[in-house]
Image 1 (cartoon, helix red, strand yellow):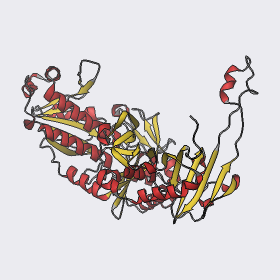
Image 2: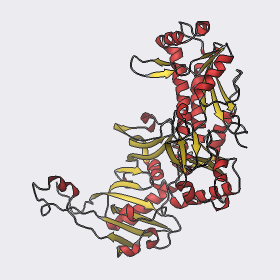
Image 3: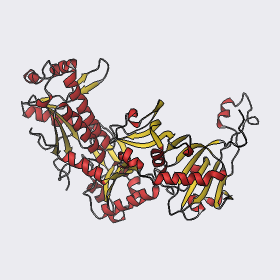
Image 4: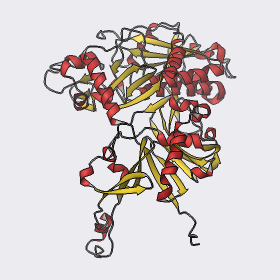
Length: 528
């Protein structure tokens, strides 16, 4: 049906709120001299439209039919890109069209503007889709869509392990639009004309300033990924200044991915002949390998490599950048900034303190765990079980569950017929998170699955089988212990997201009734 002349066309708009450092329209554009610029006047509001001239070419896919059909004269494709930059009140906005977001200068916009406007505007039960990033054993980016609108709780969001990146929903106030989607940019679908744009932007600015979302979704500000390149660069510079000054208390190196330690002969920061090989990664060793640590730069951290060697120490098995292996914490005012997996995150200080407090309150196991002086976890576990008859070796003894191909270790060491100890050499967040998840799954199956307990009994030496009853065990009589091999001479230091996973795993296990412990296994020969 045709639109009446008085009706406004429903349009999708993508809107960025620009930072205060944008003083004139061209400040928001990456290369304004390469674009065509047109002045735009909307009543008393002035703005500029930046347009990238389109390049018309045949689509790439027609080459598939080359030699059969000549489609070049029939089909042409062009990409459009434009940005409207205008000032409303004391703020500048950018409205992008086509591929216009690629014309914006990186970091010139306010992060999470769209997310906050959307959360402040939508009805509780109107959410249709969410984007989230999960900090568990495998960092995942997920989009979940519902067949009908619902509350955010219906999407299974774990508010302490998931970073909410975007939300789609319907505003309560219909004058704001028919649908909203928010991350850094706000995308709205609304009946609108160019003349009405300034008033609409003023509405969205009002919604952004509200703190309503903090009451309804107080966890949103707990964790935020730093996507502003300038801020990330500033954090990089502060970090390298601290490293160059020898301030290493809040920084260390770790293998960034799961590896089979039995197949690792050591690590090097160079494959040149005569380069030193270490059995673990040490930040101090890396700094000593530099000609002049005082000239350390972020670019050098990204350029220099960590080499993981084969068991004979001769060949490269894996390679990562030093920056990718680096974990660091920088605390400023009431926030903490964390570098992990090559990305910076901003964490609210109160959230950090709460997690730190609960993890620090976990007791250590009473069982004997000597210093680690072995080539692998398997060798360490075998050594303990060989020396102490009260400890059964369960490492590498996989147990099937669920009637399918799924397998899991009951634990690494079954001590005193009541303690399920899980041993892991310190590594990156994903490896430790997998360890804590495995502990929860194993302890849950131990309580709830008679077939699982039956298979555990088969794997245990006869003298230890009395610790696994045929009927449902009493969880309060058992310990689930996590023991982390660490080279640090200080207290056990874990990556923040691993602490979050551990705290949540401990809460689940304690809810069953288990006694949960966290212990540090010192590594002999660690440099101080």
